[in-house]
Length: 238
Ligand SMILES: *Cc1c(COP(=O)(O)O)cnc(C)c1O
Image (tube, rainbow, N blue to C red; front, side, top):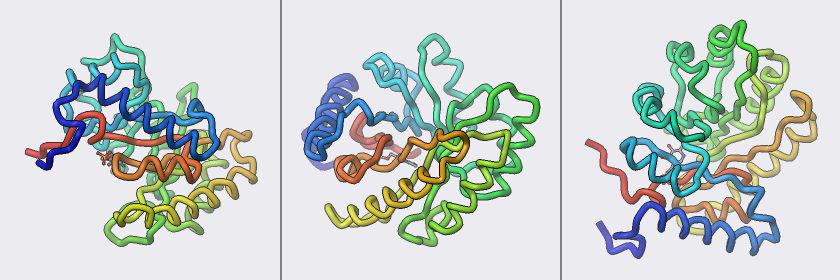
């Protein structure tokens, strides 16, 4: 591990530091920081760590895997928060999600949409979804290209099971400012989709930016950032 300045800080201190950086980036962009939602990415973190981040006032958590999400949920029921699924959803897992998540950020196929429609049949409220765009056209990443994303958004608009809220992206890992053009492309696509006034005009979420690049994402128009490492420290995969 390199001697990062955030080492040795408590989760509450890390949250405060991230909030401060969000405010600085928003100020630079001339945007109110209130329009940007911080999602704490909790994959690999213990329920106690998740509780600490909720106690520090972060109201949204993001998990990558359905099973991990279901395992931690019972330990968090007494703390009000919203749960996002941000990792790839296998179609056969959709049935576990009703009542467990507030938003799916990683919708990337009509097949998964069909699985959600089956899982949400007869439910009183549709599921909020973001369509995941593979903005760098990388074969290693999930998500679909921009043209396919528009078509999938239109399919969401037609579906009673889901409520289209916007777009999500993980851009290629490039150095520093080189990520900005990808965020800029995402913002343009977001504005195009917003202009179509789908699902009664509920499209207002652009989820992009992680620990290494959230300030650039905010400068390019993100309304939601997903941060793990900067809130909890480096992940240990075992
Ligand atoms: C892990 C993950 C993040 C957070 O990554 P950090 O670099 O730890 O901030 C954000 N989004 C998705 C989809 C992830 O899988």
